[in-house]
Length: 574
Ligand SMILES: [Zn+2]
Ligand SMILES: [Zn+2]
Image (cartoon, protein in one colour):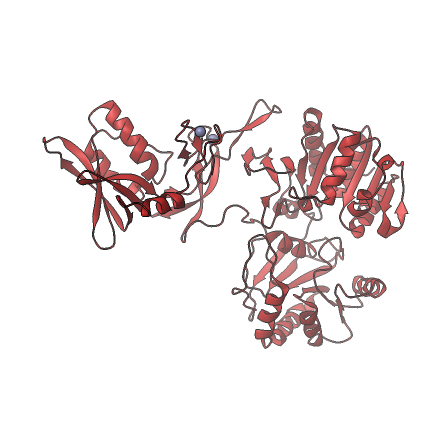
């Protein structure tokens, strides 16, 4: 067994620590090139029972097995594609398709299953991974499940796990197959430690495609037909792009070009130097493909054009130029592609990444969380008033000061002791109160988390109000706070809402007693403060008027007729 690198040992330790006290499926995030096979090998060596290592393609099964065997350890393979169905070995590397079809006896005696490329495990619907896991659990209800991936998120789903233990962070409140991420090594730190070649990203060199008009369907890849159409509209651009690649590649060893479709790849190939260029697509036969890959690795070929077939499991360390000519809808795909060029190789000092798609993915800081809520919103840090966790939210910064943010719930994770159980802080910056029980709910919740009562959503409020004769729904253009006096001469705060035609609705607040102030805080400040975690002291109408820059204006105000007056009843913020 070769020595583990320090971070590999840390990953192993973190996994053991977690599985000693929990059977919740966990994730380890290691970038491509971090040597996850050694982590798998060490875990397999330490496991008391049998270990099953699952992958979704036979190339990956073969690669993981080969690296394990390099460590001078024996393991079996269970994969129809590799024509091997070893049973009984302590460690078995299997393809999920074959294992899903295995008989009951196969599943006997496993204590750990490792799922490679685990961002593919889906919780919705019947998938092969879930059925394999179900059969393993039948045999051993406390089987430990570990997922490995370089990209712990999936298009349309977001983060594939719920909690990040080392960073004490809640990623999502939604259901996920994997609970905690117990260890993560970033791509930067792997490059910094000298285990990977630094990428040099060159955005839109000279000429580039324009894919900005491609329709982004939530949770789905771009439609091939749309991409084809977009490319044929821009076919004049391709020769210039290829010429640019060739001129930049003069001093380069190995060039991988990622094309969008078979037709596109063929076109690219016609502009490359003949004799040193080749093409691999999904239609290329296995023998021909192996031969092309062999010649490329032997550097008989300099340019290798491919269509999404060489993204995972392909390893040619000398690659020092990656050219992206295909739109990448997900950051993880982008990272996988660039990862092809980051292996260390003698004489290689960096890897150029030429992005001709104009999409500008960030290799190091993927934006996985909610879409930007408003134009001009920027990433901001907001400390939780309850636990102090520094939340990364979208926010609005004016003159260097954070004036508003769109965070709804603290993402801090509270851990008892150094290894105790963890629970989310859960502080809500913004919430919707349940009318039935008073519980705080997420602003988008349909029913109360505590009592299950139905919660009315904003659109429904507006629709219902518009159907009423004695209701007035105003689209608010501006809001003003002023001091005024009631008929008896008592000072009060007057809040005026105006629509675009200058029509006004008003509401009043007295601030004399403690209960007045509490009511103001509850029914006005809680909703209007741009930073709801910072509640100011307000004891006079003048105090409230001075707050105006720190308040947000509602998008709609709903008023109901009460005798001769309109009374503000609901406010809807966007
Ligand atoms: Zn908190
Ligand atoms: Zn409730």
